[in-house]
Amino acid sequence: MDTPPTRLIRLLQLGDTETALRADSIWKCVSCQTCSTRCPKSVDCAAVMDALRQLAFQRGSAAAAERRTVVFQKAFLNNIRRNGRLNEIELIAAFKGEVFFRGRSVPFLFEDAGLAGQLQKRRKLHLRGEKVRDRGVVQRIFERAAGGAQ
Ligand code: SF4
Image (tube, rainbow, N blue to C red):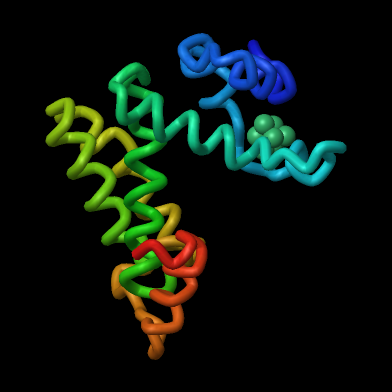
């Protein structure tokens, strides 16, 4: 990471959001929560990283590869919200479709298609997606996570 979480928090405290948004660290963060768990001041650094990614995405300051990270996160969460569990085919279609319509990168659509057979052999790719029975519960979890704002 070019800028560790502690330094990013300090930049934000000083009002230097622009420098924080340009930091490569926000795209290296894997949301493991270690910094949030260990912070002696109880700062939720992982949530700050997530907020910075969203802001960089909204402002269009993220590079193409970084924007894909956010597109994937959104597609993943929408998928879970809709089905209650991951539907891999639906996720791939939503993610690839969105990236294609944003950047029109035809090679990107098919660049990892060769992995489908291996994934299926290892039961990591299910052609028929399943849904949990009570999707209302999932909806309520999402609403609670969003602070009841939805
Ligand atoms: S959440 Fe994990 S990866 Fe992200 S900044 Fe904190 S410690 Fe690093």
